[in-house]
Length: 331
Length: 309
Image (cartoon, rainbow over all chains, first blue to last red; front, side):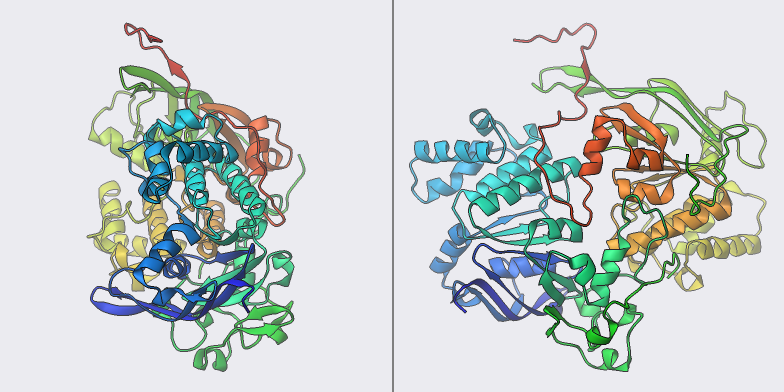
């Protein structure tokens, strides 16, 4: 039990939207072991970013989170301000989708990188050398010069490397990466992912990697959790996900992406992704699922072990290997 | 070339092309990197291609490749520094003389060519219902159509894109991203263009919706015979919608051929690099030597020496 670094159990989050509390996460349960990389995959509105914000305890005012988030056995949702500062400042680091939105445009890269160490009383010279060293490790050879530059003088890919360096600066145990490469060009994405993966593995860092791209997640994670409308609907090993996936939504998502060299009509999941608050009391995917039965609409399935994977589907056993979606354009 | 049974189009290029682009070049004047003066930046250089009726051409590239600038010049949203864009006349309309430079010339151009943008949230008027959004286009371009004829045409357009009369009274914010993009496509098709420019038209959509729109685009091309200029950074998506492709890097075309050839046996180093970066089952990210930053082909501005102090 204590081998888990992060344990999320029965997480439910409501946030205020136009004066009303609305659910954004219905039920989130997963754990990340030390040094393990877990992918959290889902489409827009699935609640994946909200999960990361809850783990960081960065929810907006008025949000209500129930269930538990434990870091190293400690209840994150009940941490004292002093403890929370340590947790947010040193134990966990976050990398965001848009580095430009998270860096002060009128301060230099050096100011940005040295702000944290200065606040902790690290001597400036020492902090500077460590920052330049870290920039080197993320593939920025001329770190000393870059430290004197401003964010607008760096490309998106370089700036995201600066963010990775900044996230590593405090030697955290857990990295939360929220779509860190979605805003980048594909060739830059590959570079940045290679660097992130290499640094994470070299340091035995645990990571929660949030993305909408199943193949990208599979490449850099040990296990993957698939989220839909505020529910984790499947958890299992990343390797072999293309053949082993059991939940109809996961299978549908895997088939929706065109594969180079296979030019045929694409399998499509009917309808559109819904938000957590639009889900009824049954399975969150029921409205789009070609395999739904009455029970799916009436009763929300819980995550359970089905042949080595955790799946929230009443029909997981009988559907295995038989899930196929139509190739329609009009749904 | 091998025959592919999934291709509905006879890949025969005959007759006049519906779109012909020759030696297109665009130079922007930008602030120099040291902020002290201006420099000229060659965003697009020496781009030529043609597109035939019901044909489809992908323009592939990353940010800064010049692909969107090419699309914007063809759509008339940007003036080329040099080179020509020739678009075939609309199916039934009086020939527009080459000297038209007024509103009617613009309207004429819009009848021949239409554009669908990446972001369906910002390309539709939030105040207008879907009905109004489509009807306005018909009123502008087909003045002799009566109310009933227009209503019938609106219904047909909605049917093309998989929507129906339940959506007529809705405003864009009541629609999902995929539905909005369907409306944007219907609106573009309303004036019966010869060429549809799709600029990253499926890039902002969720994966499970993207497939629906890609299948839809495939169906529409075979039904309506409209030609596609499909601008995208995503090679996997490009393959679904186009027969031919050009790959752009730093303003120039680095590769051209049938989409299948470009994807399966690329000849340019850059295309290979782009292909390697596409995530797919079993993919792992690799650290490559740094590519040069795109778009940095700068020319000295006449009369203002580029002092290297």
